[in-house]
Amino acid sequence: MLRVSAAALALSCPAAAQVTWPMYQANASHDGYIPVSFDPTAFVPLWETRLSIDDLEVNPVAAADGKVFASLRVYFHDGIDHFFALDASDGSVLWSESFGAVFSVNPPAYFEGKVYLQVGNHGSDTHLYEYDAATGDRLNDGPFSAQWERYYAPTLYAGRIYINGGYYGGMYAFDFSQFPAQQWFVELNGFDQWTPAVDGQYAYAYTGLYSPKLSIVDLDTGIELWTIPDPNFVWNGWSMNLAPVLGGMDDVLAAQGGRLISFDLADHTIRYEIPDEFSGQVSVRQGVVYAINSGNLEAREQLTGSFMWSWEVPAGWELVGSMILTDAHAIVHARQISAPNDEATYAIDLESHQDVWSYPVGGQLAWSEGVLYIARAGGFLTALSLWLPFADGFESGDASAWSLIVP
Image 1 (cartoon, rainbow, N blue to C red):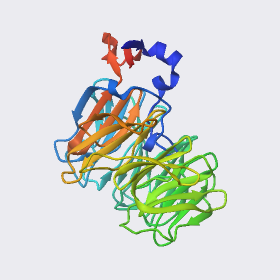
Image 2 (cartoon, rainbow, N blue to C red; image 1 turned 60 degrees about the horizontal axis):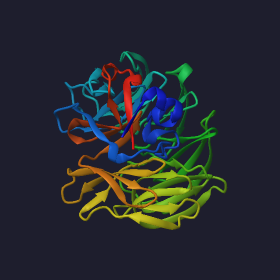
Image 3 (cartoon, rainbow, N blue to C red; image 1 turned 30 degrees about the vertical axis):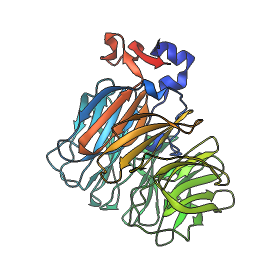
C-alpha cells in the first residue's frame, strides 16, 4: 500500500480529497453519485459512537469540513439531546442541541459553515433552524406551517433553501441572504417524507393523492408551471419515502408502487413506467439507472429503461433504502428478511457486477472526505475510513496529517 498525504492528494486527485455530503443523496439532484474511485477493501473502522441509549434511529447525516452532523428520529422524546455535530476524525461530540418534547427532528443539510434542520410539531409550532456549524449557536429560526410531519433534509441550491412543508402539504423556498423570511410557498398534495430536487431553473416535487403528479415549480416565483400526472400512483400512506431524482437527460426518476418511473421534462409526459417490485431510492450515473428490484440491485439504461444487469443479494437478505454510486462501485444497504436488525453494507463492482467487499453493519449511507458513514437504529453512527492517521495532526483535525490508502 502507498500512503499519500491529503495535501498531495488534493493536487493529484482533488475529487477524492474534497468530495462532501451536504444534503440528502449528496446533491440537489439526489442522484447519490460522488465522483471518486477507490478500493473498498481498503476500508478500516475509524470509530463508532452511540448518540442515544434509547432504541432511536439516527437520521441520514450531512458531512463536510471535517464534521458530521447527525440527528435522532424521535417521537416526543424529551430529556435527551437530539442534534449533534461530531468531529469526523474520532466521532467526539463538538456540540449538541435538545428540542424538548417534539414530534420530529429531521435530517440536516450543510452549506458554507451553516447547518439547517427542520423540527416538526403541529400548526405554526414547526421550525427550520439555522446553526453556526462550528459553535452550535442558533442563528435564525424560520417557522412554517405543518401538521405532524417528518421530512427529508432540506435541499440547498444556488443561495436558496427548499423544503417540504405546509399544513396541507407543499414546498417552501428561503433565501440564504434573507433567512428566515420566506421567499415563497406552493401548495401541493399532502404528503411528507420527501425533499425537492432542484436545478438552475426549477424545483421538482413528486407527490401522490389526490392528484398524483410531478410538479415543476419556477425557482423565483414558486408558481407551478407544469405538472406530469401519474395516474397509476399506488397509495401506501401519506409519506412519499423518496425524493425525485434529476437524471440530467431531461428526466426525473423515481421508484413508487413497485414501478420504475421516468418523467420526461421536455414533453411533460411519463417517458416509461416499468411495473415490477421496485422500491427504495433510485440513483443514476452516466446514463445508467440503479434501482432495487425484488430486493436486488438492478441496472437499467436510463433513456429507455432497458435491463442491463443485476446483482443478487445473498439468500434471505434484501436491499433497502438508498445507495451511493462512485465511478467504480455501488455501495448498498442490505438487511436480513427474517431478522431486519441484522444488516450489512456491500460494495458492488460496476464492471464485474460482483460484490467485492462487505461489512456487517448497515443503515443510512453517506460519504464525505474519505469516510463512509452508516447511520442506524439504536442511536449508532459508524465511520469507516480510507484515511489512516500517521501523525498527531489527525486527532486535531489537521487534514494535512491524514493519509489515503491507495491500492
